[in-house]
Image (cartoon, rainbow, N blue to C red; front, side):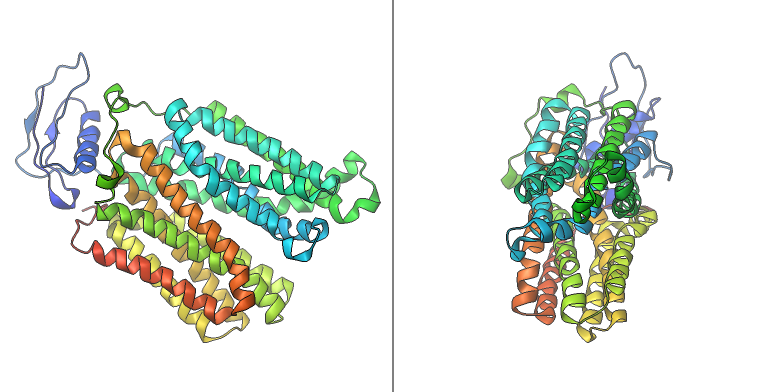
Length: 467
């Protein structure tokens, strides 16, 4: 049976009425993905139903609940992403005592960023071949091994071994970054933003849990009987052992709770469109650009802030720590309502809010270098990152067909974390060579890039707008 339904601009559809509510979801997904004037609605084998068209547009009832799979992925995100704040907090400190020269002190932190950027494409391709769950479990296992290796490297005072473990931890983070796409696949497209923002909310737990492992590190060191003459390192030996336990929890949560989403056989056998055709869609450029530039500017400014605050301006470590902690909370707290904002404003509306937050952030940062300037600038930097990253992530599924999702997602992830790696690695050099003001003007160029993409998409339908 085939029903032809007119495609409405702004994704308000006249759908076929059938006895199977699941056909409504498939109809909406295929119409958005294919951008065609008509689409085909085919009932499942053995399903007998009579289809007829409504005379007017029909919208789905808004449902702000999410399936259990999204909650499982949120918990897995909270555990798996504990790696990042622990490494950011301790990597430079450990590196300063183990590195052969001071200029290499931050190399362990750089290694985790490089590992993430290098791994996103191959990990996504493995998911396409073997399914998401197997690769999620592989990523968790790699994080366990890397945590133990980092602990051993610190204990043996081997800088090279610790950097290698950091690189492997970056691979685990690359896998965990795919949780948000798995959550989007568990809901219909109208709730993609809500699912992505909820998974990112797990980052709030990770932001607290990561540095907290250092507090309990001495107790683990005492239990292992580490000698007191290893005092500068014994705390971090215990912290990374605890991180291994957290990563075991990630594997348990994914192994027991997550199930791969079913993909129709017909979709698996289709190769998809060439990349040149895919990137003729300006919405795809906006989705990738918003996430990539949002991540790059956040990483660029956040990495330089502690150095400029403490080493250049002389602010205390307590004040510097408070600014960075406030920034991390501001990155993830808006996930409580960013999905709702997409439903009200659309994807471009949320991205525009993110750009606005970035512009105000830069204006405040350029106006002075007192404590309140740094605090407000970093708060707005976190909020802007969330809106750009969630908006870009939720917009991405509207730019590809189901059989193209792994290919497009891998390109998106490489762009995002490649830009983050370049920003993180260049931030220290820029702040040391040219200063804070130049760094801010370089950051402004990333805002201009997103504004240009928004302008290029000004005539496109407002994707994601619900009414």
